[in-house]
Image (cartoon, rainbow, N blue to C red):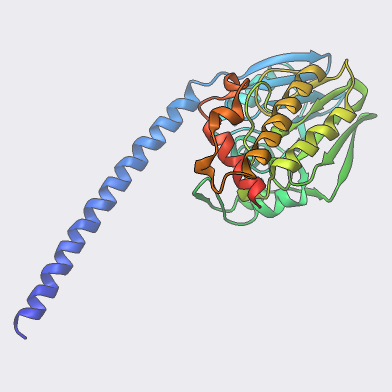
Length: 311
């Protein structure tokens, strides 16, 4: 009986030392991770690509930003990561001094909506589907990582159900929701008068797309979104992808063919394979190996399709 308290004390001290070491390691890792992330953003340049007289695409780190310049105000589509807001604003100021009044979110992910609060502080009104508002308003989990709720000022001011039309000095900008594609809150932004379409992450030009199943995205929903976009464009439409170079209808058709082919192959393979391990990545992605990259490799694309179609 005398030794039990001593043993308990020793265990407590041992556990306390272990916890202390863990916390120190965690803080060190977090510190250097933050430095690496900040260093990555420090090295990012925001490049402006002119599309039409009043429309630009801003390329940086994260989703491509659409920029529309009205007679009295500016609208942007997506805001990339928060640490880039000053650089993005600086790039816009090289083009125009007009106030940024509108910010449309194509969906809720941090590389597209991370700068919301910073632009709201400049007076921007945030527009997005109601599911964007819902996901920004509460903690969420994506790719194994828990994200805290966004600050209230970073959340959607104007939340719509299916469609909304914004009027900028007589010009109509049409925002259209597509169901359960990349996420459950995706929207296209169509600049009608200029024949320009921003598709957000429902289009990764020349590369495999990320389909966020944890945000209720789906492979077949993604394919349907592309098909809907093809009905909205013509041969002269300029298409802004969420990631990748400025595109046209032929690029979107190639993207559609790739995804429909991979889905068909996966559905066929799933009829004979009892698990993902029984499906060949090379067989599914053949002829499209060059579409794979570090973020969405062929192997990861196959896993996403399998998990989505298994539902």
